[in-house]
Length: 634
Image 1 (cartoon, one colour):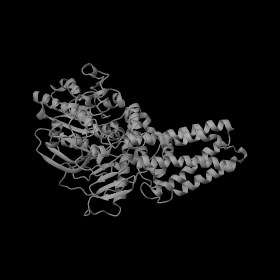
Image 2: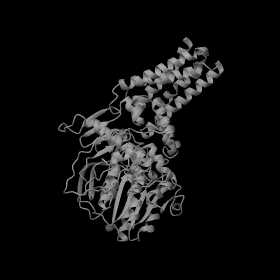
Image 3: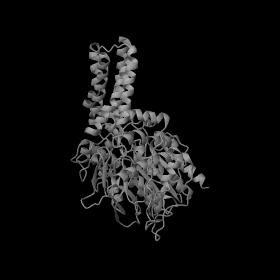
């Protein structure tokens, strides 16, 4: 029995060491309540690994224990790299996005250089075991196995009983264990190994989320019209939770901007790494002009969800990204009625899409046609014949030069660009665009990373200048709207580095995501838009401005110009509303100001709404809900 306890303690201490280290790396603090649950849940894993030892001889025991330690260490290292690079948990669903979700070799090497000490600390348990394994005698008689299994069952029951604590609260251990898939919060509150176990279980056997649908008691203003269509939400039992939620959503109202751009061309741009820190009157004058002419969006965010693919998903689908939904989206075969490509194709426009990198990257060879862009050209399926696709990153200017002639003479066109020039890493060694534009930034009083970032965004600025000149020359600028948003903030830059150039101090959770939205047409009068908004709100805003008939209840974003309450959602379930901001990892809500009145259940209600939007967004894609809904309404 003593030898078994010795084995148990070795495993338990190793797991606790890695859990504590992970919390410090990922969340930079340790909450006592979270640590208690992590300690409790870790008992199970240490007990199970110790039971395995009872079946093994001494030689087998060394290799099996070493393999177990390496596997556990690999899990922690993978998640640490994910947080250090992407700022979020690496879900098993993300494996379907791999190679591209990480840009594995490049980004891991970058993280290894920056965080060498943290990585070495994670390897300590494996190193110690290899050095001292001869001093650890774990041999135990298998005839005591039944006793150990009873102990394991006892620990498991205690673990389940512990979940009763604050059972009914949002993001309580019970909620995270049984009802809500929130990997980042789960890893913080219950421990990383528990999060990985739940993730694997849900990946293999599926997961039916619980959604708390609150009855909509809002009354319609009879003087207003709303962006909705008459729909029957009776879609069957499998999608009932989605229909229950969507049928209870209050639609957004039509407003003074409804139909403002009706009949105009549209150029829809997802700009790699674009952020408001790149906008400068002298350095990037075209970006400065587009941001500050016409609509000036003062409180716009581009939330970071799993790199570019999450930004593209929000911008094009107006749904909240999850790993499950992104995986399904990339496999194709979905009905996506409200994407720019599908909508404008129905309106009689010629529709095009371009990307100055590999055409199949992020499986865009599936997603682009699905979004209506059958005329999709990128490196590898035609664009390489018109521009240099061998650079890293490639040039946005070259992409504009290679593409504009395809559509400039059309009567009506809708064009989608995914740029690349602003891609990390930001240095003057391997970043071709930073090197190309180094002369513009070399005398600026910033670190090399910031200067290289600005140099890369200079290429985007030059591309936009070229685009506008070509539109002017063809006399199409007045009849064209340019819409541009960043896919995410430049996440290889720390908040500290970003603050070198930011006009105000930014934090890691919320304000690093603050950015600019461009909706530009020469005829638009200057207007300051102070309303809170994010990437997911762009699509419904544009659909309304073009006077497109759509049902606003079916999108998670809201028309920025409507009177609908604003809500910005981040990947870790944190959020900003008009009344304040909630940090989901710390559980702290901060009011907008001292005069803001907050109802007693306000934070709980918004947390429920955030969960609902994430779960419904996933369900819409997972169940191909739009196809079911519109077929049911034929």
